[in-house]
Length: 235
Image (tube, rainbow, N blue to C red; front, top):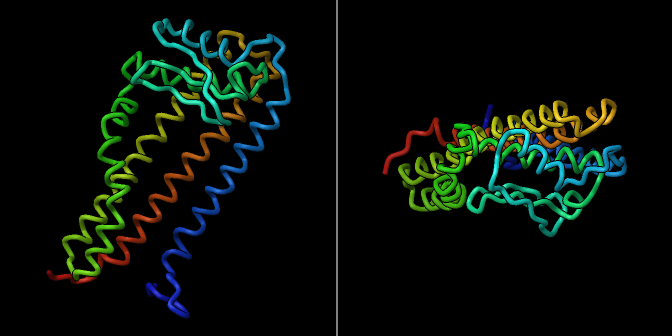
């Protein structure tokens, strides 16, 4: 397949990257619509998101983790530096089925750290390197093209590969946190039998965004390898 098609169009981008970007947009839209849908369904137990997170922690024997409110929508996260679960406006005090699912997922991350789950430890360890790689990749490639330096281009591709590795490690971390959350919800009776599938759909939709992010990153990496990997470059 030629790199440039008609009118100098980047064919690798069109064929490889664009479909993955469309998938990513679809995944984002789906998670928002699913969350909004089940945010309208109040759970019969009357549990808030904060109470659900605390229940998951108790079930797993995890102590010393704070549950706090944070501004924004879908800004929920676990901060291992302060051992804090931060839940957004739509989750912290909400008694919706969706809020229970999201809060339980974030508590699942806290449990991962507590039990020493290797992938999340690995992700935390490589964050500084992958952040540098994602910022440096394209400047290095552009500089390499400007200076006709194959070494700089190769360094740029390797730097971008680091961000792909981060997405690859993130995927099992997120899926495992959701699995822990759903197990806790079911075993602890946090939701009724008919509410449980709603929480599962919410977390499954969220997981798709991580699959899509990995697909976009891998497609970009493959594009770079196809463009530059086959060229005979000399400094």
